[in-house]
Length: 111
Image (tube, rainbow, N blue to C red; front, side, top):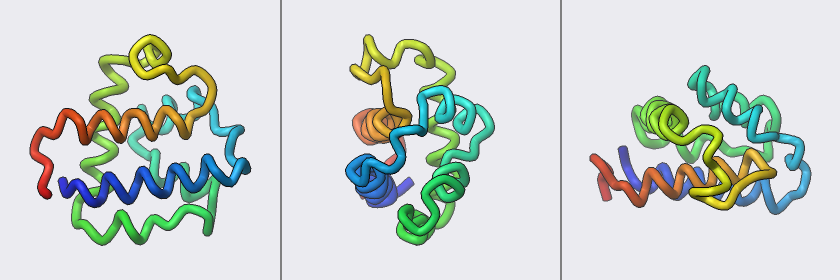
């Protein structure tokens, strides 16, 4: 997976948080989307044109790899978000934290 796909995802998520329009996306919503491996799809449905998925789709397979990596974190840490990442309210903030975690772990990332 290319690190640029992840940093572009963080920028898109940050934009959604900053807009203030998507605070209703809960941690439970994110858990459900991660479990179903449809986070990007859920964000597209909820945010529409405010979420530019074309930037992530530039990198072949990035979307699927992102979903799989989020699912790995979810499997090990769901319910422990506040203790480990300080997130307890906003689902988008959880996605930012976990996307950052993927970068920090760095396994198999291309630069």
